[in-house]
Image 1: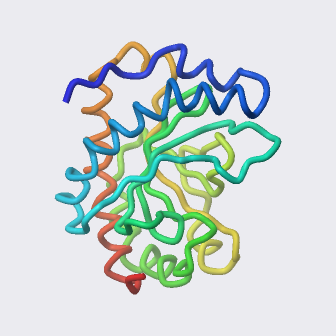
Image 2: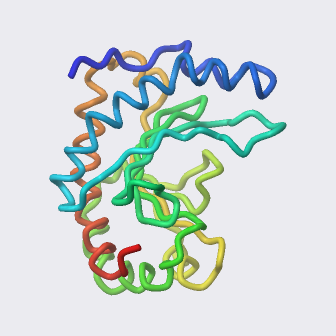
Length: 206
């Protein structure tokens, strides 16, 4: 695959004022690239996980006033959607590219996933690269370099709790790296896949 990478213009989309103008720019500049990444990484993730993976480019269809502050393509073992399942993400905030394994608030299996993370996942996470970052809220760009002590426990106890882990690549590096970003994403997915596989073994299919 020849992927031309992301550009300064892609990141600058998030500075466009107004819902309709920003959405138009998202559709023109970013969504085609996210779809390219979806086509490219779906079979790779299928091979890494043993689950047939489908990609879903964020449409932001429910927004009526506030323009999106970030955007992404998600990969899940469900053709209809990703939000109820552990899933992988590639996306952009104005300041960086993010590559994630995510469990977000719509997932109905968070108690079982928290148990899996506590009993089997911690040994996997101990071997994650030190560059990995953690988040408890996919709607905010802020991350931590170490998981909060209660991050996993909250996932099993609080209805809207979330769990995200992966790599951030700053805007300047993302723009400069061009096609090399494919290698970064593939390497990161390979490092995250064992944790995904452990979680999938502990939850029922939907």
